[in-house]
Image (cartoon, rainbow, N blue to C red; front, side, top):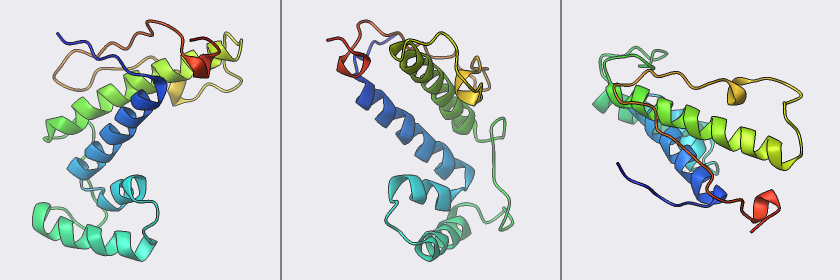
Length: 135
């Protein structure tokens, strides 16, 4: 087991990185490019997707992708970590706002479910940071 100490901004960056990785592994190249390089035009992202998919995913038709639970295990492993991080950050942000429940229950507040081959990661706030009103 490992422990990594991060601030909130760094944890968001890891979440975004996992999102990009899972999109790349699933064949959703254009979406990954949109996350990583928002300055790219839609046409540029589509051109990149066509090129990468022709080399890496020739078996997929243009509008099909691999997903959670597919033969590419890293997608599920990334998704599991994304869920846990998203869940922790959402509830911590809510608590920092002085609320004990959200106005709207979306996926951010759902209990993470295991899809990958590994146990779910654990994200624990060890102390509140500036973004939560304390140092």
